[in-house]
Amino acid sequence: MTPAPSPPGPLSRRCGRGGAEKSRAAARSRRRFFTRTPPLPQRRERGPGGEGDNGIALALPVTAYGYSNRVNVFPPRRRRASAFTLIELLVVIAIIAILAAILFPVFAQAREKARQTSCASNLRQIGVAFLMYQQDYDDRLPDRRDLKITLGYRKDDAGNGWGGAWPPSDPRGGWAIVTLDAYVKNGAIWSCPSIAGSQLGASVQVVQTAARVPAPPPTLSRYWLWRFDRPDEPIPLTNAWGKSEQQLVDDIVAANDATINPRQPSGPADVELAVDPYFPRTIPSVPTNLKGRAVHMGGRNRVFLDGHVKYLRDARTD
Image 1 (cartoon, rainbow, N blue to C red):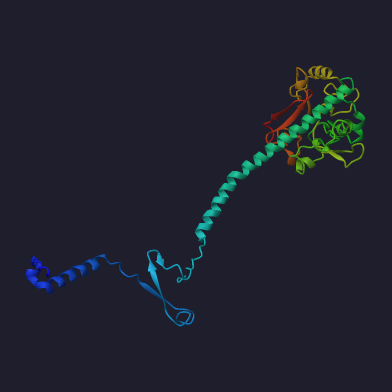
Image 2: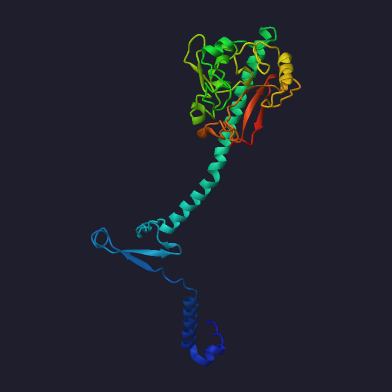
């Protein structure tokens, strides 16, 4: 038996069988229209001959990140070369100039401070050499007035040496280079690094040449030793030739010389042994080209009889 036909639905009753099929087809078409992924656009590229490699246009699909990366269809974009404008260059130059004006004095001060420290080390070694000499010679300081004269002693107060100019005597220390050669093997310690090559270091009142034994190149002395500035006989009270430390202290106290600082020392720690050269501006006899000059800015290093070194600020010098 054939099955009985199903009763017609509402749509069939209204539109008939043909109309129902058309309605379902239209519904499926609408669903495909709204859910269909649009086709990827394509770009046509031409090969070297105007078309593809075989004269065929290349159609490449576009992806969400650009054209397909299987073939580099885009030539690399040429970037524009960047350059500074004139205003920008001038601003940079101005900034560099300002920084240089600020930093160069700082660098110069740092360099001078380092040289001052090296100078203090030189004087400390000289002080130690004098102490070692005293230990070997019955606690007495050197008496080499003969060397003082041989190396070129300049006359003093009468004006026969420096033409009446400062200093009033000859405190140069060339004789000490020879005398202390057994205790000082480095001749460079006899000159402060700040004075070498300067106008002050080349002045005749400062520099003195002495040959060491055995004879390497001559050594230059550029330190002053005020307690060994006159080879007179008898030995002046303010000079240390051949004296013990205590005898020198007692003689300086007895001399009460206003040019000695301090003029009334209480012991060897108050007696200056060697010092940087200096030319106070307040002394009329100082040469014009050296007036107010000092080795270090505004002062000088000093080593004392007990071997300690101290920096002395002097308002009379620059």
